[in-house]
Amino acid sequence: MPGPGKARYIARLASTGEDLRRAQALRYRCFIDAARDGLDHDSFDPLCQHILVEEAATGALVCCVRLLPLAGGGQIDDSYSAQFYNLSRLAQFCGPMAEVGRFCVAPQCDDPDIVRTAWGAMTRIVDDKGIELLFGCSSFQGTDAAPYLGVFETLHQRYLAPAQWLPEVKAPQVVRFGAQPAPKAAPNVTGSAMPPLLRSYLLMGGWVSDHAVVDRKMNTLHVFTGLEIRAVPPARARLLRALADQPAGPVT
Image 1 (tube, rainbow, N blue to C red):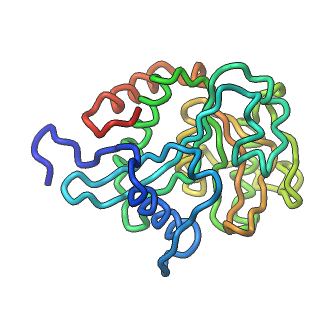
Image 2: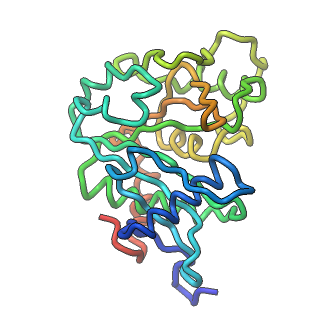
């Protein structure tokens, strides 16, 4: 157990090929097959920064996330998300941005401090690089929309992207929000069916596309998610910066 004032988890950037392979192995367990060994890798990995969250006492990898920095909206077609969404409106975004991808926590770990540590590391990078927009795909497990219709109604009613940034349909198979009957009472953002990453974005002022993409390769439904840094509520921004100030490995 960590001593008083000592963090249980530390965040650092992957710096070796072995670091990256460990992240890819965790991603495989989380996104592909928890029962088998393998590596989840793609052509975006060499372009990204990879944040590792490790247990301080053991060095065990408990979380990873990758960031793809972009100078501005003119580069957004180079992002992973652009494979699935028409992001032509966001091409007009002028400030620096970063795509957040492959955010996952080891299946046996449910300590909320793990995700908080990851967000603290991302906050340091956001502040150091002057990033003005975070974006990415937030995933729902499985490709059957039925269990998520209430959540999709919540997103449709309360969290759609501003019109000037709203992604358009590009993927061949999507679930359009509002197109199917949904429960009369849409669930709260904190409901159990809301994926934790998406919940984090929304509580910070994030927004989503008006449809979910059916991704059979990853066995998920995912929604495009954006967060303009200036929209983060001041109290939550202070909390994130407090997390970012905790001792950790280098993440800049």
